[in-house]
Length: 189
Image 1 (cartoon, rainbow, N blue to C red):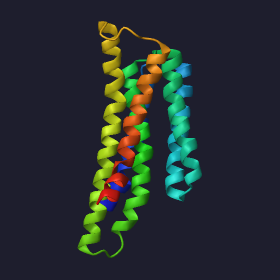
Image 2 (image 1 turned 180 degrees about the vertical axis):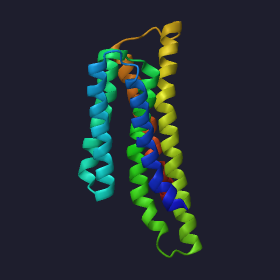
Image 3 (image 1 turned 180 degrees about the horizontal axis):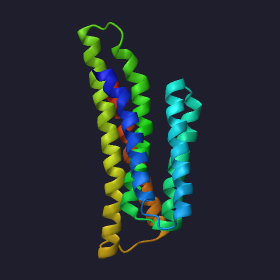
Image 4 (image 1 turned 45 degrees about the horizontal axis):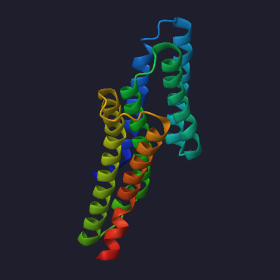
């Protein structure tokens, strides 16, 4: 069951991105532009399906780029940019890539004969990886929202490029710390 869920998770994430983009494209008032963006979206989805069926990994980035391009063009040219939904879209996109990596790494391990101890170690490693992914996804949305609220409320008066760079650096530090935390635990054990 775990290999099937691992393989289905990236497909579900990219499906969410395609459905989200299609729903946004329905709001584009210019019919000709909307149909061109729908064609780009459908072409991207077709490329992703072909990449999955034919196992052509080099096609995946092309399909994802087409889907993201349809979303970005729709919002940049017609719908306007809403920061929170754009962040959530980006988090799902990054989550899709990370879930694809987890699926490629862990699904094969469950298909071979393993001892209960090995299966338990693999399950714990997969759980830690999923936890890091969830924490990074939440931080990627929550930290910018909190920073914007603090800046608007006047709690943080510095709203310049250096403060944005410092905030981005702090976020990267936390993500890197989450990434290397398992290797630090192994050295102490």
